[in-house]
Amino acid sequence: MKAMLSTAVGGPETLQLTELPDPVPGKGELLLRVHAAGVNFPDTLMIRDLYQMKPPRPFAPGGEIAGEVLAVGEGVSGYAPGDRVLALTGHGGFATHLTIKAGTAVKIPDAMPYEDAACFVFTYGTSHHALKDRAALQPGETLLILGAAGGVGAAAIELGKAAGARVIAAVSSQEKADFCRQIGADETLVYPRELDRDAQKALSAEIKKLAGGDGVDVVYDAVGGAYAEPALRAMAWKGRYLVVGFPAGIPSIPLNLTLLKGCQILGVFWGASVFREPQGHAANMADLFRLYGEGRIKPRISARFPLEQAAEALEMMQDRKVLGKVVITMG
Ligand SMILES: NC(=O)c1ccc[n+]([C@@H]2O[C@H](COP(=O)([O-])OP(=O)(O)OC[C@H]3O[C@@H](n4cnc5c(N)ncnc54)[C@H](OP(=O)(O)O)[C@@H]3O)[C@@H](O)[C@H]2O)c1
Image (cartoon, rainbow, N blue to C red; front, side, top):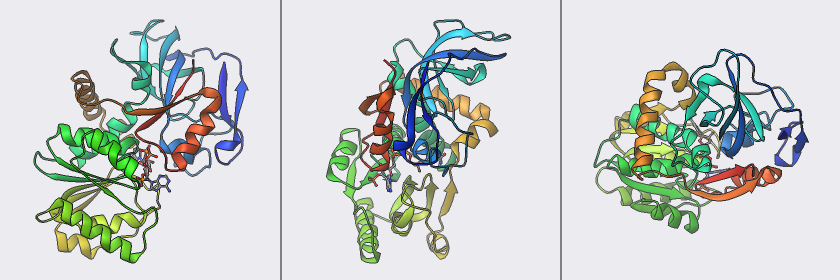
């Protein structure tokens, strides 16, 4: 088998394509031939030891994969060679073969391509949990998404529309704004790649103008940094602010704003919710497969890279260039 291994702390340039012996499934495990691995922002952090999960080296990044069962370990029932599955792996996905705990595999519909399956659970799972379980987004409400053209952001656009919300997509370029409009955003705004105090004020004013009325009911913040406060300042009475991610840095927020708006700031930790609330996760997955089957959500894959070029995929993500999803294909 081949794997793209992180052998030293650092950026994508530190990854090394390595030949390894084929793994053998242990008790309770499945051996998979990986067909596709979705690329997610945490992959860029994990290789730098900046993520909460720090696997021992050498390890392959890649937290989400889809593939075919090659062999079944002792004590596993319900799976057979040839089954098509997706799985959240944490890491290890940038590889041609992988063993996983059988309980983490989810069989995928025949009509779902491996590439879609590898770009499905992480982004849609996060955004569905955020909008439904945390914000209780209602039809007719206004939803602002920061970083709307990225993985979780684009998923939030589709899910926000499916929930009947009016979606404002906020992004850093006109190309990204056009992409968001294409996938369903009602309104778009382009913010600068760096924000000073004046630009923060201008951003808040623009959000309020687009939202109309009292402001935005729900903010989905996948960006953080200097973008957070202007979005909070543009919120409506009793709004809900979803803390999803911090690619632009961890913001500090003046708490008096929550008092003035009567609003809530809600943490979103989807990975923990999957373990803490397995029944809720199962129900959410059923919702997502139904929406996919109905054609109402579909991973927007804008770039594909072979395993040998996995570093380029991670560079694209850290350079803020991704539209929707990037996928590694194993050929
Ligand atoms: N809370 C949870 O449970 C959960 C689950 C999954 C992911 N996340 C987090 O959500 C965030 C987004 O993940 P993703 O996989 O959707 O990533 P992504 O596709 O790279 O999207 C992130 C977006 O952040 C914006 N951004 C702002 N500053 C950036 C910077 N310095 N570098 C890179 N991007 C920057 C970019 O949009 P613009 O250029 O338009 O600003 C980019 O599209 C990450 O922080 C991730 O860890 C959280």
